[in-house]
Image (tube, rainbow, N blue to C red; front, side):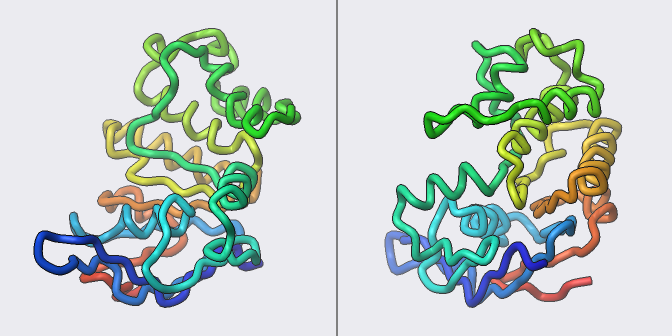
Amino acid sequence: MQVLAARNIHKSFPLAEGRLSILKGVNLTVEGGEIIALMGPSGSGKSTLLNILGTLDRPDEGSVSLNGEDVMSMSDDALSRFRNEHIGFVFQFHHLLPELSLWENLVLPTQLGGTERDTSHLDELLEFTGLTGRRGHYPHQLSGGERQRVAMIRALANRPGIIFADEPTGNLDMENGDKLMDLIQALRESEGQTFFIATHSRQVAEKADRRLLLDKGVIKFTD
């Protein structure tokens, strides 16, 4: 089943004179359960595209469909609700709240919107990732690899249809980067999860199902 479809995505930013065009007609689709690696040189627009696909930004032109919904036609409030229910995010830096414990960081997304949600699957994911004994620890008491695994579990808190990850291994050494990608592959197998990953790392890209190259504002090729 198709989870994501983007059509004719354009995005530019204002300069002192004129505008800088970043995306120039991007088209792509993602099927459920796929792991996609988005590659490209620095400044190619990977993060810009990821933010648009993940509904954190809007394109100048074009459409984005997630789970069959035309998200670009939604109001900001409706889009915020949709994002919380259907999309997960993982970034290069874990962005865990330092004053909250591991468990409190995990359940925070389930409390947004004012309704309590089932968190039993978070216990299962903690056991799956070997972090059960760390529930009460705070971010500063965790290693870099552990913090990024917590960020990955947090992204799964509301059982989203797709997770967008922006350089998720960029702040990790090679060993922990491998472990995180192994976790992503295992989550795909156990949860049927879909991942769309922006990365500079060939090591990461080699573990994806497909690699997209973004260059000069367009997708040059896929494999």
